[in-house]
Image (cartoon, rainbow, N blue to C red; front, side, top):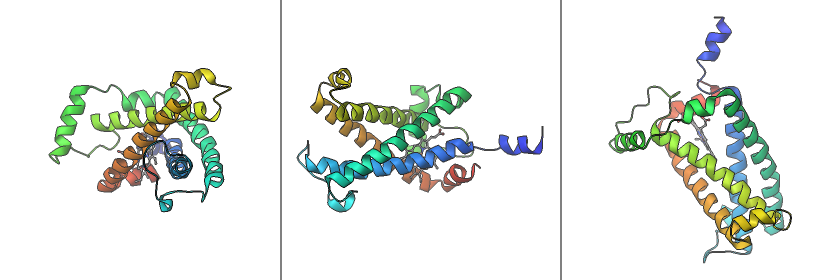
Amino acid sequence: MTVANIAASKSVHPAIVRLTHWLNAMAVAIMILSGWQIYNASPILPFSFPSWMTLGGWLGGAIQWHFAAMWLLMANGLIYLAYGIASGRLRHRFLPISPREIVGDLAAALKGKLAHDDIAHYNGVQKLFYVGVIAALILVVFSGLAIWKPVQVWWLTAAFGGFQGARLVHFLAMSVIAGFVLVHVVMALLVPKTIRAMIFGR
Ligand code: HEM
């Protein structure tokens, strides 16, 4: 084994995963903040988001941010998924997910006894969270397409129960993603070495 191989084998996250992770974080932040501004123009629930929590200044500006970040989110997400599937990393990191492992790890986490020695190995709760947010991101993209092009992809819009149904699913998927980000950032800050590994690879 060469020195380069040894160095590479110690990397917790390959460069492509780190790059796509941080680009994804940026795209998601832009999409959520501009999405809240778009929502405010025609709320589907009995509340609006305070303007300091939104991006774009007004409906037209927010739509421009939303569509610009949409291409980044989709292209970047496809690269992450294609690499993860082709390399076997997704399967290796996130599967299998067993209910027993999730319950056991959740109980240990609540007691403050969850070990973080090996950050290259995700526990049951992390696996569930990461697979869940990836599924929510895929759902948010498809429900967004159904809202954007309801005539061209009428079958997709119909699958969501129509235009208003797609809007609701889009909002709910956004809520899951925003909730994930909140918990995810707090957890990462509690174990700073995981942030170091997601920036520098180790
Ligand atoms: C904004 C949307 C975000 C999403 C959707 C997201 C999603 C994910 C996913 C799916 C993973 C697993 C990646 C893999 O191993 O293939 C991950 C890992 C990670 N993320 Fe994020 N992330 C986001 C933002 C952030 C932010 C803002 C931080 C900074 C604190 C952060 C810190 C980390 C760290 C440190 C890991 C490694 C996890 C670990 O070792 O437990 N993420 N993220």
